[in-house]
Amino acid sequence: MDSISLKVTDKLIFLAAILTLISVEPSQAKIETVKGPTFNLTAKEGYITTPDGGAYLMWGYALNNGTMQYPGPTMDVNEGDTVIVNLTNQLNVPVSIVFPGHVGVTATGDSNGLLTKQAEPNGGTAQYSFVATHPGTYMYYSGTNPELQVEMGLVGAIIVRPNIAPPGSDWAYNHVDSQYDYEYLFLFTEMDPVIHELAQCGKWDQIDLTTYWPVLWFINGRNAPDTMMPPHSPLLPTQPYNCLPRLHPADRILLRFLGGGRDLHPFHTHGNNFLLIARDGRLLESSTGEGADLAVSDFTQTVAPGATYDAIFTWTGEKLGWDIYGHDGNDSMEPGEYAPDHGKPFPVKLPGKQDLTFGAFYSGSPFLGTMGSLPPGEGGFNINSGYFFMWHSHNEKEMVNNDIFPGGLMTMLIIEPHGVPIP
Ligand SMILES: [Cu+2]
Image 1 (cartoon, rainbow, N blue to C red):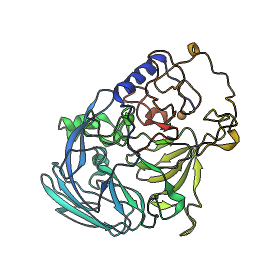
Image 2: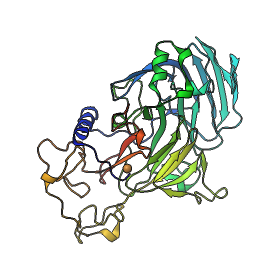
Image 3: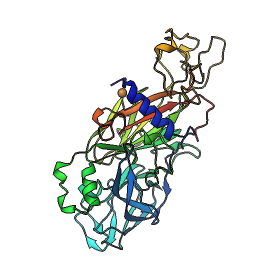
Image 4: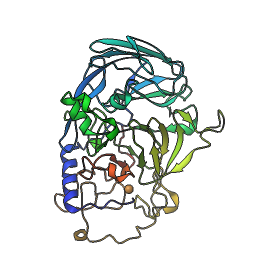
């Protein structure tokens, strides 16, 4: 859908929640990762919270025997690295890790699982090793009873950095087509709370995975509006990662989409199409060295379970119909300004303020970086007078938290005026 109309009461509750929860300070623009190539993970239990007031028992991969986290730490390695992952198991069932998309994974461990070596319960260990031969976006997750263990939270992302990007330039793959200014992680999962409630009560024998019925949806382990809260919020000690993409006009941002659950998640970017440049850690090229010549422009990416996708998104205000800076013909152009619209007047007479439903994201002006007058008490979140676009699942049942709309697979893209730092 192209616009979301909320009942006024829903909207007020939603905005009040955002204003209460979100710091106006921006989040980081690089995906927060842990540098490898050696990682020590511990499978342990803990609790996460959801915006509807829920708290759920989870299993997660903790870094260096620290706090359980959902999802697991985002591993960051370079092409050619020999990656070593040491797993210690504090749970009371066997666990393991598989690394789809990597070849020649060697594993040692306490026991043989169906897919890989396992760490036995209550202190068992396993070790996995592989050479990261291809740059790209990957996942890791439990290869032991994954239907249950991935649901319980044993899943995370791996980023393999290419080795030929020029110094000071960020590329996702070994080609300039994958160059980006900022990158953002979108690891999608879903949850059936009944499974977690039965687990919390120790009623493992009553868990029926064939009646799986998710009612909570997550980006990087958080549901909207928590997706927009700062990373490492003290309110969410086991959910460290947020998802709040930001860019200036004409910047290129890399979106790393990962299907961590069991359902398809069609993720929709408002504001512009994206260019899908890679799937499952492979550039969409007709032959090696061609670049992303098979890239596809689209407005929704259906993210399949187990799959990963890399997309480049940019935005200039082209075809918006007016100069986003509100320049007259004598001003010099801003970087990334869409030239044919330079000096164009805003074509619409804005409605009277009494006819508008205001909100925290409104700047009071159609022009980027310009704060208009707002009634007392309105605005406040849009401190840079940016443009906000809702990004969300196009499977709109996934935009709730336990049937409470809006929530779930949703966040905001912020177009920031030039000069606003995106760290
Ligand atoms: Cu929409």
